[in-house]
Length: 249
Ligand SMILES: [Zn+2]
Image (cartoon, rainbow, N blue to C red):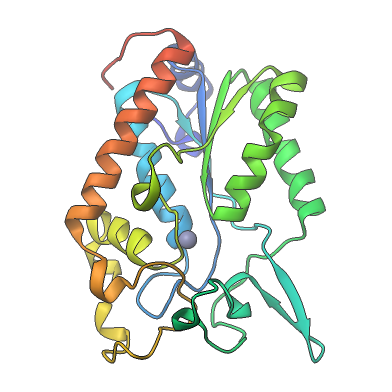
């Protein structure tokens, strides 16, 4: 069993790992439609996997996944639509689909509520002794965390960073169920990706997907490249911040 999972650690092991590497990893997940071909927990699965890999290299402790997150909200004819429900992810008309309540999505929280939740999590992690918090996953949650980073540094003395460290298409989890996220999931959990559930007709844009068409561009190689390069960057940043040498787990 991993020595990096917060929920499995006893106090003595916790103290030991904290001393070795005072970094907390926070998967910013959702329970959210990611196209017909990906699991509802896609956001947290990807970030949790990345954190496991980074923790094996530099140490640190992985928190349980949050599954509530903010997102764009609209009300049409008295019905609420969140994030990808809205059907206008991209100005590209090729990616348009009608607004609809996607099956399985259960994650939305307004920004003020998310702020209370995130502020409490960061305060508690700082109190427990962490000096750095790495949070990543659902786009709007990750942006929100980044925007609060300076506040957390000033108020709690913790350095807060996300894992968006690469440029363009290779930036980890930078689309929605499209080329980027589909490739990552293909690389880490091939059995969770069902490409055959997507329409074969390329003239029809798949519902609830935003980014480069996964049917044309997603593959294991891209996923592996993204993972490897992001891990390298994160290991470098964490080691630099903590001024420590790389340790083996
Ligand atoms: Zn996602």
